[in-house]
Structures are given as C-alpha cells and as structure tokens.
Image (cartoon, rainbow, N blue to C red):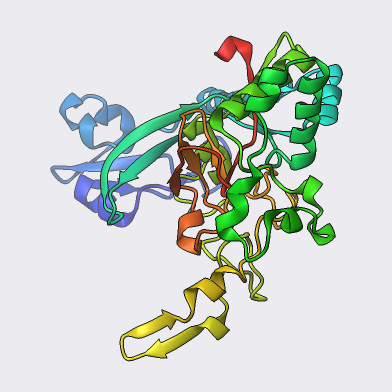
Length: 372
C-alpha cells in the first residue's frame, strides 16, 4: 500500500522511508516510517509512547479478514436484492393471475357480450380544472384492478338481450329497454328508417345508442343473471374507473391512445369525431371560419363499428369519440361522441344527458364481488 501523498505527509510531520520490507525483502513495502519530532527520528514503537500524536498518524490498514467480510456482505446484499425483486415479481404475477376468471366465465362472456381485457390497479393524482383549464383542486385516486369490455356494447349484443327478455315473458322490461331510434331524426338528412336499413352501415356491429340509463343498468342485471358468476359482478364503471382505463393510468393523457394528436402522421384520424373538412373552412380578417355549418353536419359520419380505429395500451377501442359512454353516475357520460369536435372527445370530456340519445352508449366492466 502506498503512503499518503506528500502534502499530507509534510503537514503531519511524517517522513516515509523506503526501507526494504523485512517480510518480503523488497523495496515496494512502505509500511515503515519515522516521525520527525524535535529534530529526532522516532520509530513506530517510540511514536506509540506519545498518545497525543496518534490523531495525526496515517489510518491503519484494514485487516484482510475484515476486507473479506465486507466483500461477503456486499455479495449477500446483492443476493437479497435479487431475491426481493423476484418475490415482488411473483406477487405481481400471482395478483394478475388471481384476477383472471375461470374458463367457463370467459366462454359465457364471449357468447353474450364479448371480450373483457385486464385493467391493472393504479394510483394517480387527478387534477380538477375550471372552464379555463386552470387547476383549482386535486385528489388522490387509487383503483383496484378490474376487467372492462374491449368495445362499446353493440346493437347485435343489445338485440340479443332484448330478444331474451321477450322469450322470458318479461314484456314490461322489454318495453322499457327498447331502443328509441326516433332520436336519430334531428341528426339525419334522410328518414330514420332509411338510415337504419342502409346495408353499408352493418348496423349490428355499431354501438347501441338511444337507450336510457335504466336500460343500461337492466342490461348489466341481465348479464349477471345469465353468467351467474360467484366471483364477478357486471356493472357500469364509475367515472374514476372509466377515466383510469381510458388513460391507461396516465393522469396527463388527453386522448385514449396516448398521443396528443387527433390524426396520424399520414393525416388519418385516430378517432371518430366531428372532423370539419378543409373545404368547409374559410379564412377571414377575423381568423378561420366554418362555412355552411348545417351542410358540414350532414357530412359527419355517424357512429362506426365498435372495433374501428386504434386500441389503447390496455386494448380498449373508441374510448375517445364514436359514442360518449355512460358511467355509474346517472346522467353523466365521458369521452365525447361522433358529433363532438376534437377538443370534446378528450378523456376528461364530460357530457350530460337526460334521456336516450344517439350520442351516448355504454360498455360494461367486471369487478370482483369481494371488492364491492
């Protein structure tokens, strides 16, 4: 081991010698040294006679057994860290596996309504903004894991629900749950019957709309009765569950696909919303202006099939646009619709409704009964 640098040695009044090591017989060992004290050289043994000088002596070399102990401790800590990470991983996998339903439940779900995807537990801070988008409050949100239908409930699925009610003789429920297609009238440039019979619309795969909140709740009740799962409860999502699933747990996400842009780099829309073509926009001294707003309205495509556009990171379709989706809180829907401009299909976009509307649909979640 080399001695301390020259500055330290000079300040401490220590003169290091280059005597050969009595053990190795070489000049590489510099462990022997003398102390200049009053012009007299002292050996290490003599220096020990002056306790008051020990505070300036070079630090002792660690014993070899202590070095070995330190290295063993370091290896032990590394092994413990790896073991801890492995345990955490196993716990996470076990938690995810515990959230999965049995095969019978999955089969019934696919037959009756479709495929559910896993939504992991998440914790995030929700910022509450005013009409000027200024944050005036915040709250901590913690969501337990659940499962969500990958698409909005389609006409095909909802029609099967209505037919089953009729087959059971539940005529009162059937009547209250019917689809109010007359709600389309203010939004079309042709008769409603003609619109619904259009073979190009593939009506069955489009999201069901023009139904009431009570009808959506009755659908969830019916689904619970048909599947009869001892573990899972089917229901409308709370606003926190819906927003957590739409944002994939990212409180800063504006739209469900994660990108802040409404179009791809190839100028293709990512969502179904009121996209005003450039041919209907003119520039004036006051800025840009939409020409002939009512003509533009009739060029808006209505709803699109439930598996159109891009899924988000959790595997959910159309969480932004297409139809605003009901939540458990009555009269509230999130995500905007085909009739809303881009700003109003954000995850935070809240739409109020007071009855059946062609702009509002729903999707179902599955929650473990022990979480309720």
